[in-house]
Image 1: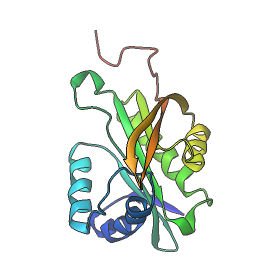
Image 2: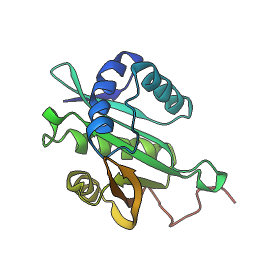
Image 3: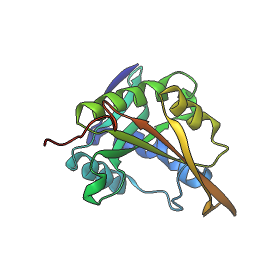
Image 4: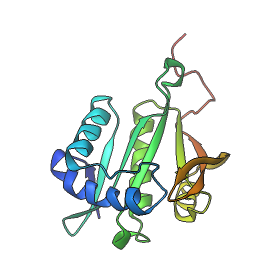
Length: 174
């Protein structure tokens, strides 16, 4: 497996991985599958914000991707980031998500972020919850029935992990 920064050339594979999560799943609360141009716009915005955006390749094929983004846009949240990790069904259970999330944690720590948040659709998303637990996240809350998708109410699980010094020191100078 090779982890590397994502590029525009990865957009077709990223779009193909994300699409079924929108169409058939509740990991994403979107209803309409974004096309490649929308996924390219989103990737450009994340990269322009200075956040890492990674892909995992196996035998030359992109099998997963992960990125960080702003948790919230107000300045008081500037040391917190949110992660997103998606792995193709064929590559699940092969350590791809773990490798991507571990690298994302390292990259965000190096960028000076102090907290990473995961917003996971559905209490029943055991794979994502287990992945985040294995990477040091803890459940900090559940938003019951916060979303409506596929004709049912869906919860969000909030998980959090400190990065670097976390809250043990000030992230800014005196």
